[in-house]
Amino acid sequence: MEQEIKINAKEVMEKLARLQSDISYIKEHIDDSALSEEDLEAIEDYEKEKVEGKLISHEDIKKELGL
Image 1 (cartoon, helix red, strand yellow):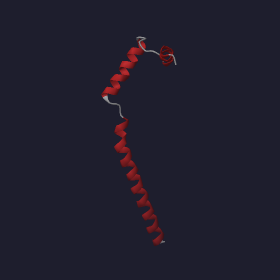
Image 2: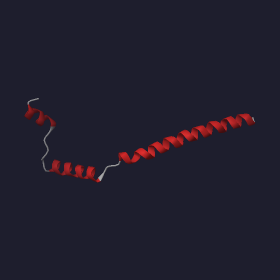
Image 3: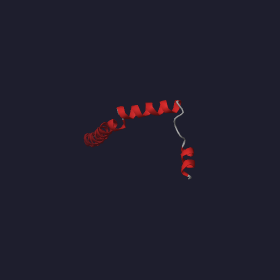
């Protein structure tokens, strides 16, 4: 029984180490998914231009280019 507990403890420690590694990876890359101030401004500009009717559809651009 004692040997079984030692084996299980070893497995648990290995799993915890893998989980910690995964968490560290996620923490490193979570900032990459955040929008910058420049991104937020671009979205605001897009929304404003959409409301003002200043945007050209993909289809219209293709027609203009003869595609």
